[in-house]
Image (cartoon, rainbow, N blue to C red; front, side):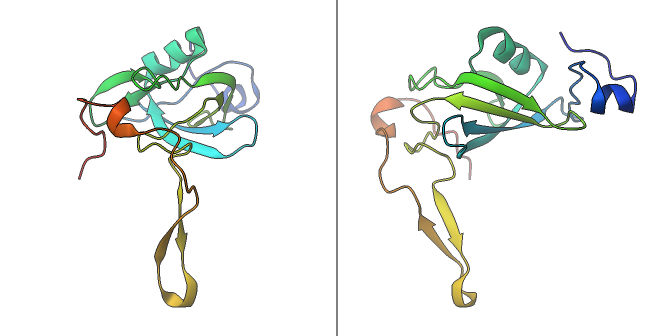
Length: 149
């Protein structure tokens, strides 16, 4: 499915999908809402997750904390349906545009639901999304929280 990287011209200007995974076998992924372009989340894929995403047209990620592939939305029901996948110039980062109701395990539409304010040399967190889409305590009842301290 993925072509071996042979030359800069092939990678930067060619039509071969030749992703560059890091030393841990991962490639970073930015996921956005295809309708409005808002960033929903940042994650990682390994070869298998990218392959599954391409085959199913539903996003799969590699969970660095759990060390498993996860089909986004398989527990919550908020599947990320792929509308478009882009790869950057040197093929070491992926941008996925999706259709989904929610992406954040905390319950918001986007994982980037807060803003960092830097007014008057005072750093403060401000919530940009006011309402949760779902109640994570109900949706993920009995499952461990993926956030690690």
